[in-house]
Image: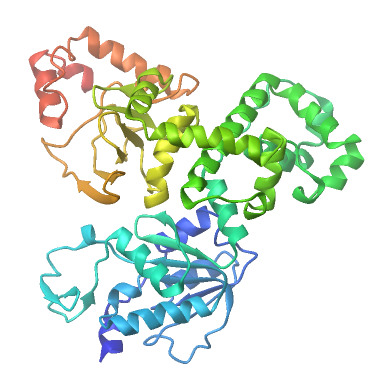
Length: 474
């Protein structure tokens, strides 16, 4: 009976599910690794991965009961735990999926804010519909606690309702360190140079490595290391060619920001307790040596950074003095594309929230509380295309109470809208000048005369009408 009811909840999809797409984006799920979908339903994720040439198999008690359950490097247990009513069976499913995992297990479940009117009858620890389907809606932190309780391993939050459970500590650390790495692209080519033009493809890997780590790679860290050395004489000489056609100052600045990101990573790792150099991934160990000389030196700085976050006046000062973002009496708002330019202490502050929640897909603006210890991730889906985009949802992390909630906003007159979009971006962002021109024209029209009323869609439209500025927005 349980299997029959669970089978009704399996959706037919031609696209990959949200957790699987996130895992691909995070490079946790890769084409060079085997993947097994435990409780695959109708096999939507398997078909999606196979269409790209990936190795993927799966088993499901209803739709693929005879399929062999094989050990794989990556295993997915996506939206399975929430359709199992019996707690013991739920635990057994997680245990079975974990036993098949040799590298990383991807676990996801539906969250409490996803419950709709269809799930109106409570049963056990969940809800049922008129069709008899069962759903257990988890709190995000509840799901993480359940996974750790069953597997005995602390999972890493990837996104709301999505966790990764790593078999090897070094892989866990490698993923976490990547999370706080630079998001900015490498400096773009500005000059012509024959050596660079002829070897552009050969140098790509070196460019990408330096952009991620802010240092030159060791032999074992670059797949085409020997080829590059053979062509240029050394890695340092090859990089000098890259500097000639770009901008050396930009590479120096990028290396400095990578040094800050490494301090952020180490500061957040201290929340788990003391650690040694050997506890870090091999690449992170090399990063520490290259940027700080020793772990002791790096820890001295990261410890001061972490303790600084606990002092409210430090956060308030950092928000007020930040060179990027819009400051209000209660918070600093900054676009995710400008994250890399935040002060180190604010990166640690935001990192504490991401350590709880993971990445928030489609988030546009980060709100860093000045007067309370809260970090929010705001979604403005039409930020780039709409002069005044509407807020659709806000994921709020309370760092004092260690809690998480989602606030959803309906379209209409009461929906919050955004103004002065250029303020959320860094001065180097090409969109900033375009947005600033719109703001300047709106100021000339007197649309910002009463900032207390223009924060909603209805209030903004009323301001437009009262100023007779309708033609400007046609």
